[in-house]
View 1 (tube, rainbow, N blue to C red):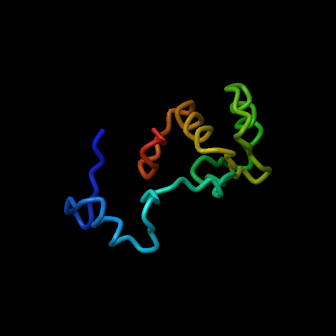
View 2 (cartoon, helix red, strand yellow):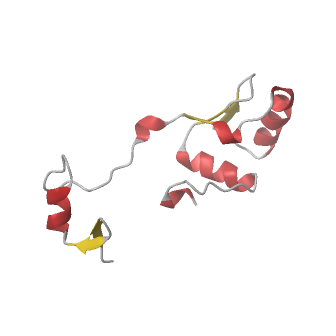
Length: 102
């Protein structure tokens, strides 16, 4: 698999890419996952206060142990993979999600 590096829409070599990236040292990868963002509150997956119990039951019925609804209707998701599975289960799509969010 060939990796293509781009800067400002131009294809560049890895050396040029690393040289122009701030704080990137030789041997480091350009992007790293950030596990410190989880659990994460998902505003779009929330529900009205009157439907909290219904949403909790729906998540439990689907076998989601990492999806939680607080009493005000906010949804908290424990991991990226659980978020992706729950979106698929509810037939929703996040157009702003990352490549692996599917």
